[in-house]
Length: 504
Ligand SMILES: Cc1ncc(COP(=O)(O)O)c(C=O)c1O
Image (cartoon, rainbow, N blue to C red; front, side, top):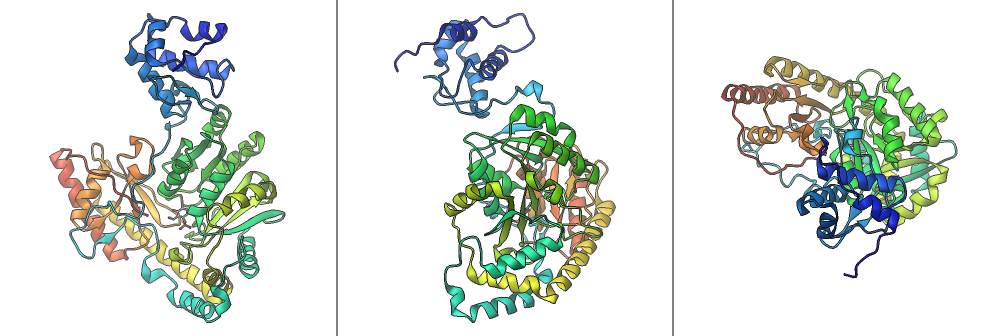
């Protein structure tokens, strides 16, 4: 490779001796120096950092020291390439050094699950396992007759076998508008796009709005499918903690100022995987930050209707409509296999979203759209929602009671006021992925916390979805978990590592 020249001021800064008496590691100092040069504009996207050995010689440090700093810069998307030949600075805003972001639990590029549909789940010993691992209503709670009638009518008309118009059939758009409008979602002047569900909606939004190497802010833990979408787009994810009141908004403004995110993704109602909702105080604070700093918020509303008492207020109301893109799925309130969702966005994003949609399959099944329109306007749909919510409330209560009865000391769990899942923190020293494998062998399927986290902070967490199993099964399943945990706590041992398992 031809020798690169470094302008004198840059060379002076880059090759300046490192502080050998200080407390900071030499590799951390070097990493910090590169970030400062980027922040000050001395290093620009497209510039090269010197080859490993060359820089090590200039600085009088080991090759390992430079390699470590380069590895961190590479992992966090500040620079890319072959470090032995020199890294290329990427066209991204540098993230602040780790020491200056105590508010973020982690910053990294998430990895894609190998098989998001559960191919790696441990094989249950039983042929009819207790299914705590999938967050979808059990088949007994799905509106089968309503959906069958709607599909039957749609399939009876050959015209519905044709391509639909891009962006949705007028009839279905009207039905979705009317449904969302009744729920208080601000629609005036908005662009509404029908999509094949929220996974696709997030892919569209990410493709449209995330610059190369850009940052996405998320809750931590969060829905692993969203992380998969961000990973596929090469995003750097800065994850902010969630507690009993939802996203910890106190850290948000600093995160926005330091990381310049393309958007914040969150689920304000019955967050998957914890089941918690954003409190009204946090909601107000979050929207104030978003408006002040022009932070775009992606509101994933997959289950707000499934409130046991009152639905949390949506973020996209009239006064905040300019900073919120609202994303709706009908998977949980109607049927996961319907594959229809919607994006409601400020009009200024219309062109970008539509062009991203074109590259990601712009068609949503005409038959399914007709069926959705019919379902949303049928009186049986509101009856279904009522019955579904009541059944979920009973199952959530059964789960809480069973956990109280069977969990050993040291375990903690959330008590969702709606939705489909709760989060259990296991007693210290019990790792949830190992535990999930052991539980599967005893016929209880779980989603281990690591799926929803970017680092090992989910190690003790478990998502228990309470929407599939009926109350007696819930009691039985949690009983098994309690037995296993007590035995484990008694043994105080940690079995060997197991492969990652994935659940929808
Ligand atoms: C947080 C969240 N959003 C949305 C969805 C629904 O996604 P889709 O419409 O792609 O099925 C789910 C399903 O699990 C979810 O957990």
